[in-house]
Length: 180
Image (cartoon, rainbow, N blue to C red; front, side):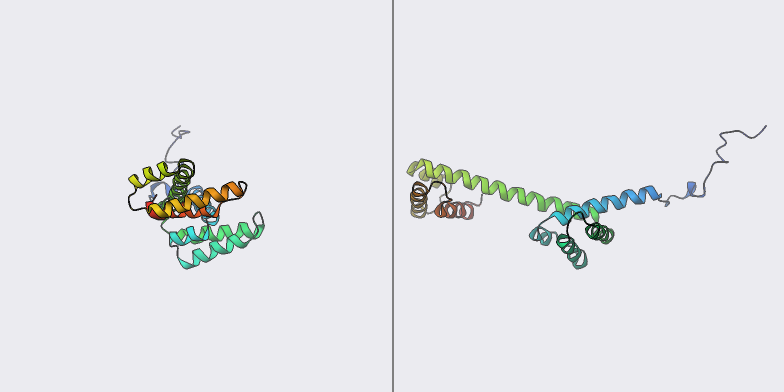
């Protein structure tokens, strides 16, 4: 009569008192996190990978995974190997660096967009737009700006369908000199 159905002592396991015990499910979840992060790293460009400053073995294997045909068994195995190598890496630091690299790319594209908008304003606004830009950024050269705008407008009137070489130079100059 003393046998109680829900007797807690009867159902105790050896690992119940072990604080360091990690279940297989927890291990699999951790491995899945490494696999997903590995996939993100493989999808990055080579220049972005260089900015992350990964150890040589991991970096080389990520580059090797890029060369293998996607959706093949070899690619899957290579991704698993990259995930295995990542177990030796500080994952929090890597995720923070990855976030910074991805934000730098967004910042680069936003800088490009600002320079494109300035170019469009200069091409449509003429001397008034150049004067307004010079007031905002006194370090720019008026003569060079006027010359690039004039050349870009000439090229666009001759061949409106094609990209203007001078307009591209104008965007490059604006990005370099204004820091935007």
